[in-house]
Image (cartoon, rainbow, N blue to C red; front, side):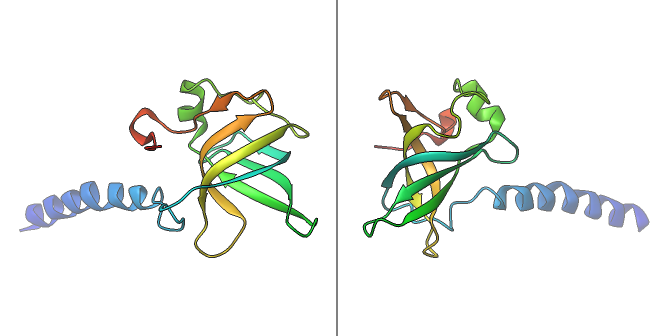
Length: 132
């Protein structure tokens, strides 16, 4: 009987642990029905796991500066798409395009970056490419 318990425990671990890991990568916190764009100055570029983060300073309609934070894919995925730690730096003017957080925070699930040169950077893996 102990062997059956061990087998069931092992199967449970094999199926439950990967599902818990996948739950982290959901987009439920973002409004994926529409995209917005914000243009501003890079204040921070973190090329770190588990997700690359880009923070920019943006002037709102009232002239007040707000900090928007965008979350992209992992450095591993981005490096395969041509990104590096030197892709951008504080002071660079960029436009972020993505899905805004549902909770009203100034956060984006990043779908595209447009550099001041007009170059567009795709942060999505081949299987994540959004339909424009």
